[in-house]
Amino acid sequence: MAKFTTTQLAEWSGGAWSVEPDVSVAGISHDTRTLKPGEVFIALRGPNFDAHNFVERAFEKGAVGAIVGRDGCPQPSTDASERRPCLVVPDTMKALWNLAQGTRRDWRGTVIGITGSVGKTTVKDLIASMLAQKGTVSKTPGNWNNEFGLPLSMLAADPASDYFVFELGMNRSGEIDRLAELLSPDWALITAIGKAHTEFFDSVEQIAAEKAAILKHAGAALLDIRSEWFGLFKTFCTGRIVSFGDKSLNFSVAQPGTYMAENVQQAAALGLELGLTHEQIQAGLDAFRPAPMRWERSEQNGMVFINDAYNANPLSMRAAISTFAELPGAKRKFLVLGGMRELGAESDAEHRALGEFIEPFGFEGVIAVGDAGAKIACAGIRRLNKPDALKFLRGTLRAGDMVLFKASRGEKLETVLDEFRKEG
Image (tube, rainbow, N blue to C red):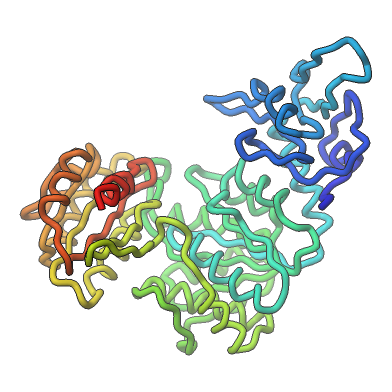
């Protein structure tokens, strides 16, 4: 299905075609590994990569054109009929943002932006699942929520959607402000605030203020009246303010935990504001499935594994561990934890504090994996590398046991579970 015209891409990006392809464009791709025939490849540059090296590969895989910087278009022949159709721009990253702005102007559906320290992806997926009961929905694929991911997500969306649900992430000052200006949401939501990316911020208050920048660019804000940041958030709002949390909404979801229940309350409150019935909201909750490695439950030989290893910070670690501790039915419970990244000078203290938080639960075993994980301190903890952690689990676990895996994304802790499963 055609998504863009070549004329639109040229006008939006401010570039010029070397040879304009006489086709409609199915989409924009930044990765030749996932590029589909009929798409245009955009050659982005970053600190450690330059996709101009893959332009020729993109054409081999069926790209109908490429968006490139000057001198970035391969021309294998002097024959004009064989020249590559390239949209030449001064800067491909700026072109990406310009293209996202262009497609945003064409949207007629309701646009929802979500940020926060934890729960962004879950709330996004909950809301999308609910809204799908009423209309068509485009949403952030996975967690494409940064300066590359958000504009790519916007370009991947179906411009005819009734609803657009996107998450915005950050790890440095000013990012939410820029991303929110690009998205220009009709509704803004902020999930729980906590210590995340403190390597780049001086305090949780500063993190809250950075997240609140989304409210400056939103037509309406849905704010939790129970939040300690409610007053601060109100000062950032330029549109309508709708509060929730003064009464409990009667909805349920299969996934356990206090934080999950709060995510459901926030998503349901927005659903009600957007005119969904109680039946539609509950149907959306029933249809919800968590993203991979976000409280992903599996069983093997009578053992239960919870893979929540997509990401971690002090707030999400505590939430996951508390929820895990409350789960019924296990004979013994084990934690397999990796480090929390991007905590800067607070890293050692936060890992020690996490150990103090864990100790009263009395888990059967706590395994800390990797250099950062080794900073976690509690009685009886085992500090192991991945092979030794795997050996310990294979020699210790038995039917009836339950294990939680939790760490920051860069730790790749899920590989321990993957290896464990291979043995059957």
